[in-house]
Image (cartoon, rainbow, N blue to C red):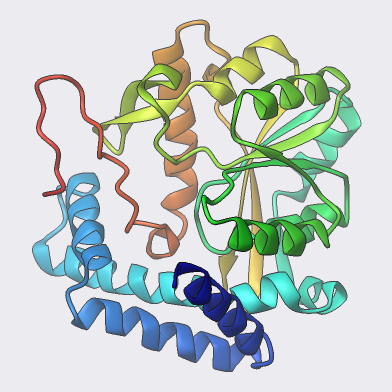
Length: 295
């Protein structure tokens, strides 16, 4: 039964890939509004997270931002067909704006390797398409537990010609080796790690279990630290934004390093906060003595 559901999902992604992008976005908006009006679990989590991260906002502002974030989430789902299945040149044409290209050029000129820090903001899958026009990179990803879905996702990402390593000890070792060779790696930094792999550091003023990996990589290599995201523009296309990350990510104290990492992510989110994945339970694990925010 589970396999049948997975193949149905894959079939739907393939089907949506035949839609024009405007139609896919309309479908995504419908999905997002459905999640909102049904008061779904993701809607509740988004409101909790936004209330924690923006305590100075009025309840109406939180509600409005949460609603917009679910519409953006729906569009992210509906864009999978485009990101994973459209001809690569056709996808590349959708990226009509680039901010901070000089930072990437400087990083390439330095030839010390690059650590790309890509939060779950906008359409992160498009970053594979953008960067492949300029360099070869290796991305750390978390395989799904469902083999059929994992094979499908792996195949669609590999078609862009990027390297992929799993988020495990073998993958971490591979990233270190690549940076030693002045390579380019990409990590999505805003998912909750295990307690042994992270430290608590403020994220929008709230203690969040934050991975130590990027700090460890930065301390041991001279690689350029570059934040990146692909945001949706009002005309339906996409803009890639490149920002140098805070240098304290290299700090010897892992809490200071993780705090700098979260500040770098915050700077990205504040550019287009409705396009962040607020439905993720970012504060699920709390320091000892503090209760979970999610019932």
